[in-house]
Amino acid sequence: MSQRPLRKRVMVTGGAGFLGSHLCDRLIAAGNDVLCVDNYFTGRKDNISHLLLNPRFEAMRHDITFPLYVEVDEIYNLACPASPVHYQYDPVQTTKTSVIGAINVLGLAKRTGAKVFQASTSEVYGDPEVHPQTEDYRGNVNPLGIRACYDEGKRSAETLFFDYFRQHKVKIKVARIFNTYGPRMHPNDGRVVSNFIVQALRGENITLYGDGMQTRAFCFVDDLVEGFIRLMATDGDVTGPVNLGNPYEITVHELATRVIRLTESSSEIVYRPLPQDDPMQRCPDISLAKKLLEWEPKVELDAGLGATIAYFRRLLDDQSRA
Ligand code: NAD
Ligand code: UDP
Ligand code: UDP
Image (cartoon, rainbow, N blue to C red; front, side):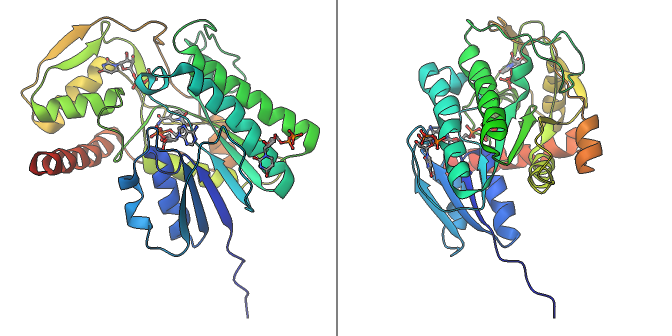
């Protein structure tokens, strides 16, 4: 008779956030025990309320800049505000979350022998001069600008991950995540997809920063989470960094026109100043992820936007009824 593998105890920091809550869903569905650790700075209990009655799920309010002693087999470190509006709100706390948070999860992984996954970011490439971005590109980050608390915090976290790997043999998996969207994004987090959809559904002006010719490539959340699971499952010698994102690149102006079309909105585009250090182009080269993980995104932009629009429609309806 074949034996069922022992179920894993998996910790997700930032588990009540946008990406973290989808990851918790996926880990629970696979039969794991999940410990969600979050201080609810940008995450919401609503994102995980459907999991609370599951005996394999546990939610803990905790700030990862403080030590945490628990026994786990795997750690996904996602805790960190991700939208520019949120991470610039308290930039010192953003750097602390990335750097001290990384030290704490790495210390925990060192003590327990757990594998540890780091949610790094395409922001480590800054305003890139190499396009599309490959993992060996070292980036063009302004260390003094308003995005630096996030960009440099995440860069330091990567350094810590690789030093704990070299010095203490901690099993690390580093993913560099590119712009991701989907249901459970925070309606006020200021990111482009949520802003445009909420504006279109409310019939408000769509705020395009700069001339709208800057590019991004948007990945649907389900595709991204599949990439997380595959990276965590790789052999011990695979550390990353691995780019995870959808290489379908469009201008922000094109995104605005698509959102208007898909929502059948009468909103109009208005132009606002481009924020400081806003990257002019961004698109992942995902050759490494394809080779190592046999992974590539499957959800096309219009389909993913459709699902996200449906989510925000329900959310705004619920808010107007409340
Ligand atoms: P999010 O803001 O929805 O989630 C972040 C979560 O971390 C929230 O639940 C928040 O409350 C929690 N958190 C913040 N500081 C904390 C602290 N000190 N202690 C405990 N919890 C804390 O953002 P997201 O989009 O889900 O991003 C998750 C991770 O993925 C982040 O690390 C982010 O940098 C990374 N990432 C996301 C994207 C994207 O497009 N969504 C792109 C690149 C990287
Ligand atoms: N740490 C933690 N949980 C653990 C083990 C460590 O939160 O289970 C934290 C603790 O704050 C520690 C940090 O991780 O300071 C780094 O741990 P490490 O063992 O690398 O260093 P040290 O204990 O010497 O500071
Ligand atoms: N943006 C925009 N209007 C908005 C919000 C964002 O034009 O209401 C632009 C922003 O200037 C950037 C791109 O959309 O060029 C993506 O912004 P976001 O904050 O989602 O993520 P970033 O990739 O900059 O971290």
